[in-house]
Image 1 (cartoon, rainbow, N blue to C red):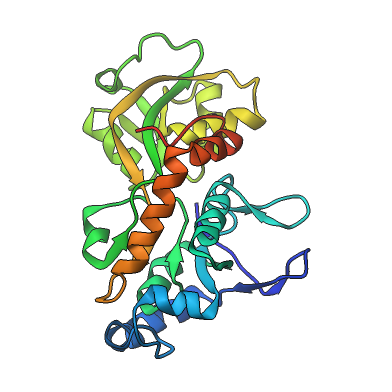
Image 2 (cartoon, rainbow, N blue to C red):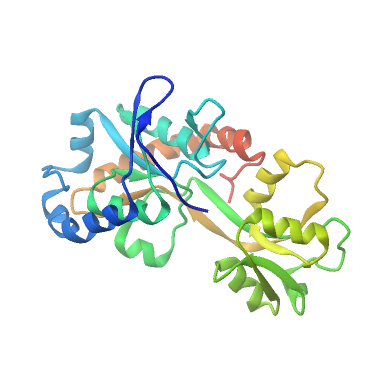
Length: 283
């Protein structure tokens, strides 16, 4: 689900800063995070984060850039996607330009922590462990875990029905752990597409994955004989990630104000329908 980046010009001539490598990001996070938390950033900024962002006239946004439909490059090479459009609108509401930096997954949080990035929009789920180290915006999307089966399957209608069944999921993923907790045997795969193929071929009984991934897949494969048979009652919250410092509260507040407005006027709902074919903004 994660990787990529190289420097280059965007088709519209606007320069797109690209990361580097995960190793460099981690190195910066380890060697500079301590001083950045005191000084305000690795570049020595002083004052609060929002003041600095408005002074330079841009907000540096981290995203993977190869994860459709969250953030990806279209046929013309332009960076687009659900997260990209939301981040652009947030930047506009802050009164600054959105400057995207593409990074491999492992470098995103390290880059936020080091001050390399001002914020990250990358379909990032809020977890208790992450909340210890980072600030999060209010949720702008909710992910529900779905049981996906062949259309002919009628006996799996709840998670309890996974007992004794075989699912296809990535090794050690939360989906695999959830399936095993209900008594399923997990067959390891690498990608969502691999899992769907095994379901179609009847080699596994189901796969557990994000409801959003199902709808995204069906947009480009509408004739695939699969269906959702159940949704896990608890959802995962998706939010923007901001470096946790003593001077980042105003930035978090203004990002939240922008997202609150976009949720209330259905902007995020419309963007979600555009990219996923469903409304992820509803819990």
